[in-house]
Image (cartoon, rainbow, N blue to C red; front, side):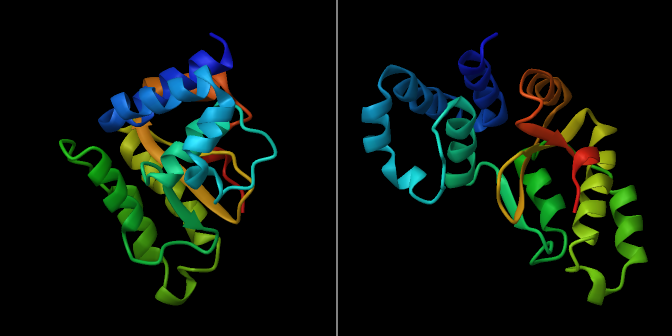
Length: 175
């Protein structure tokens, strides 16, 4: 599958509750890049893309329309916002947060925004949701934070396998 087709398939799966909207948006991109840039200028003005390829279109849709989650490098603004986002994404799934709760119990409040805790938190959340067939998928972007989306394992593997340099798993996140 070429990158354009892969990003279309990934978008429909990653943004599963908005798959029709994403497909319309993405097909506009495929049909006429100039017109697409004019139509969606508000989406792209907030990002400093050197080029507008399939991955950038996929990422910008999720980030701009808040279908993917962004946390700055220091960590959560509110306790349990990562877990809450996962639960909101998959409301019918009852997740067990054992690894996450253990990690949180080991840290004092003064260390939660040091930049190191968030990486450990991502790994603990990923461990917890993998038990139920999900994983955290991170967009590889040039920013001082982390943009991610929880997804099913099949979509995670499709993204990592098809666009390895564009996506990371929690195990690959570095501070």
